[in-house]
Image 1 (cartoon, one colour):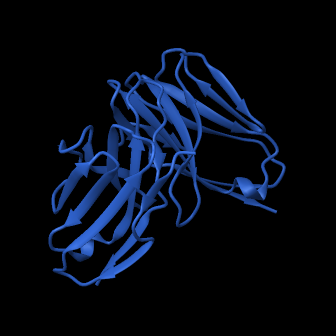
Image 2 (tube, rainbow over the protein chains, first blue to last red):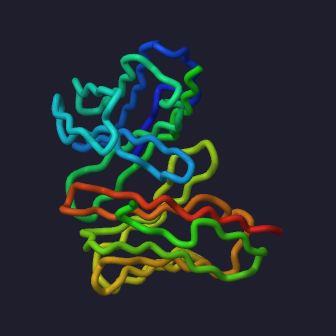
Image 3 (cartoon, each protein chain N blue to C red):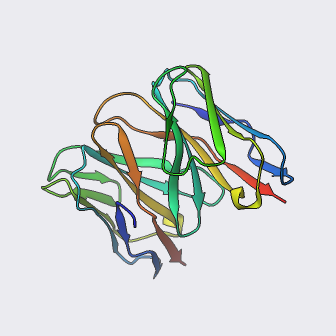
Length: 113
Length: 110
């Protein structure tokens, strides 16, 4: 079974703190993604990576950065957390190919106070 | 505006009823996926469809991909309370750009 794991299920941070969200996949997938999910807005793509050390901005990259030093690991960094970054963060991975499935982690619910 | 429009946004039905939810776009997908997500969890894949006109069945769930690969539907027969959740469709564009609809939140009441 494909497994995508996220480092925390729940996090509470203070405004201005630096926040690291880690994601690990065990299926050697090339592509990895970070989304945030908010009620009524669906899943919005923050950043994605199609290879080690490669990263591409998604639709809402502002206030975020990412790191992919190893193929299996994709980290999302909030340099200075703000209250509007309170959200559910979902990591996903997918191999190359037209009909390939995208697999999600369980999500990290982040609350910024 | 969403690239993928899902309808209805909310649906509340009694156990045993049938329902259909829709996913529409003006663009052509390389493939389309349906997910179900429960509160506090990540989306879980239900099905991937690739060929225009394709129909896939998963027990009481029937998935159809439009002939032009721009739309899809999910039909549930004799809904059960365990079907409650957020149903998301996701279309793959240009072979590597996956876009999600906002979802249909289904509640099945006993």
